[in-house]
Length: 188
Image (cartoon, rainbow, N blue to C red):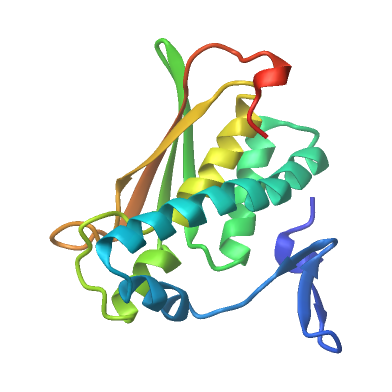
């Protein structure tokens, strides 16, 4: 599978950057996260939840395309995801996929999260809550591909801006929850 940066087409006449049918947007992280800094706590929690869910659904479409390209091989999907994250400026992603009784766990370290960096650059300082919700959404989509038919739980264990002192990396964890769900009850 070619790296995402090699597949992107820069369609300047239309003002678009695309990977096949999937359009991307280049934007400074401080612009995006500056909007979050300006919200009150309740609105911030709501926005973080909404952006995580949007990343899970819409970003999941990109991950499903990557999965098809690598023949649904889990190790290759993790490699493709980490490579695409770096190509899109989402930091350097390092996965650890392990079997822990009674279930599997997928851990992710993000070095140089643009969301944490954008938060700080926009003047957010130390946050009362993790701010890397888009990564949580993408990890949820990825975990759903690794464990089809099983609900997953994702949490940001450590955020670069939600603690003293700020951390150099953000850490996430995904775990399957409960038994396999029948196809009619599966979440899209």
